Amino acid sequence: MAEESQRSSAAEIPVTSNGDLEQSPETVFQRDSHPGTPGPLNLSESCVNSSNSAPTVEGVVESGPYKGSASLPASPVSPVAPGSAVATRLARSFSDCQAEKGSGAVVLSDDLKNPAMEKLDLVRKWSINTYKCTRQILSEKLGRGSKTVDLELEAQIELLRDNKRKYQNVIKLAQTLASQLSQIMQTQRQLGDAFADLSLKSPELHEEFGYNADTQKLLSKNGETLLAAINFFISSVNTLVDKTIEDTMINIKQYEIARVEYDAYRTDLEELNLGPRDGNTMPRIEQSQQQFQVYREKYERMRNDLLVKLKFLEENKVKVLHNQLILFHNAIAAYYAGNQEQLEQTLKQFHIKLKMPGGDSPSWLEEH
Image 1 (tube, rainbow, N blue to C red):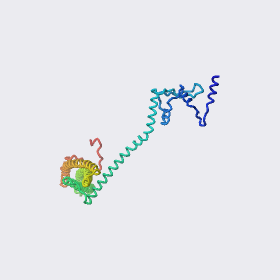
Image 2: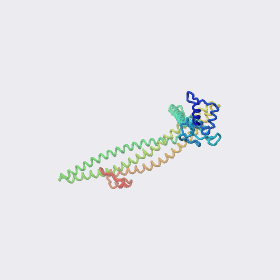
Image 3: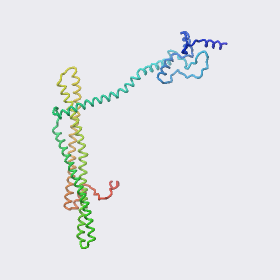
Image 4: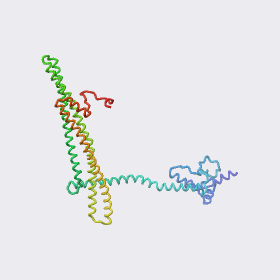
């Protein structure tokens, strides 16, 4: 009978068109005070659902199949008393969720904004610097702008450029000489083979053809020794020009760029100092003064480094060319004097290994 009365009372609860219970404030109060109903957990649940996450919260217990009375819905959670530690943590969790909702877009926007702003600032600085330097170069070419000139350093740079062109011409001529000498050696070998063949087939001229065959073969052998000395000379001077001097030329280009930047910001500062000085222009003048000081220090540092580089280059150049010119002279003189012993001694003096024509290159073990 008790179960029938409960069923009948439950069946008399009116339902709206949306399926919600029409309850009075007293009924709501009775449900809230029932031991099996959730308390202030509704706020935390809405927060968890809105953030698409399901964290495990202390005080929340997963419920199994409902085994209680049929008059009330099964409660999915255990009761949480208002003001308890669990309720406080749930309320704090709700506040954190709301804070994440409000600040999530801002944090994402800042993360995307900072790298873009940094790149934009770098592009802006590069554009300003390029504009100032381009204007300075054009004004110098048109004869309107002033240019900082270090007479001593400019003279050394110009001398180095002139020497580089002359050294390259010497290398080109030496390569032509080596090519022509190689062709002469090939002709001498062929001529010596022809004399040797005629010496065997002409008994009456055996000695005469034999002398000429030996002479041509000796000239060809001495030519191989001279060719090795010339190739060594070409290789050494080419290294001096393409590596050592070229490395200094790169420093010269960097120095010239620093000089243009220095003059560009110097001109900009001079123009600002000639204008009015008020509250609007003074910050610009101070900023220009700071930028000018930075590029002035850079210019002076590049200038001092280049002076040291040119000094070491000159010492190295004199040492290399001194040895190579002695080698070239002694080899040429010994060859045309017919002094085979002196020619071979010259190669030994400079540790030059003679490679026979058509011979295989030495193995790695032989070289080491």
